[in-house]
Image 1 (cartoon, rainbow, N blue to C red):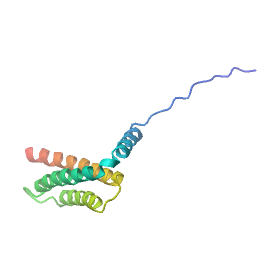
Image 2 (cartoon, rainbow, N blue to C red; image 1 turned 135 degrees about the vertical axis):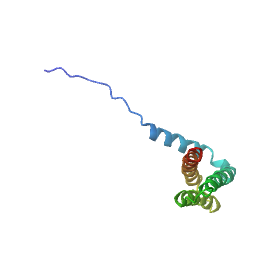
Image 3 (cartoon, helix red, strand yellow; image 1 turned 180 degrees about the vertical axis):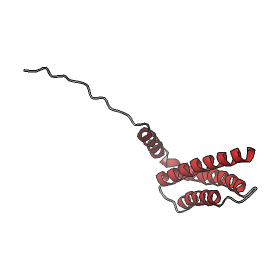
Image 4 (tube, rainbow, N blue to C red; image 1 turned 60 degrees about the vertical axis):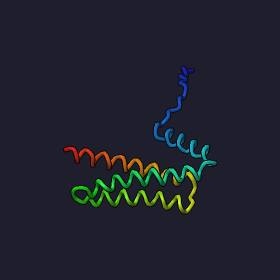
Length: 113
C-alpha cells in the first residue's frame, strides 16, 4: 500500500467575523443596561453628528455630507425611541459613529488645507 500523509486541519480565524462576534457577545452581555446605553447612544451620536453637520455648512454647503450625517443620526435616534432591540440600535450607532468620524476627519483635513 501507499503512504498516507495526514495533516492537521487548522481553523482559520477571520478578523472581521471575530470582531462582529465579539461585539455581538458584548451586546448580549449588556442587555440589562439597554435603556442607559440607548440614552448614551442618542447623546453621543447626536453630539458628534451636530459637529460634523456644522462643519458641512461652515464655508460652503456640502449637501452629501450633511444628508449622510443627518440620516444616520436620525436612524439611530428613531431606533432608540421606537425601542428596537439593543443589537439593532448598537449596530446603527456604530455605523453612524464610524461615518461621522470619517467625515469629520475629512472636513478637518480640508479645513486645514
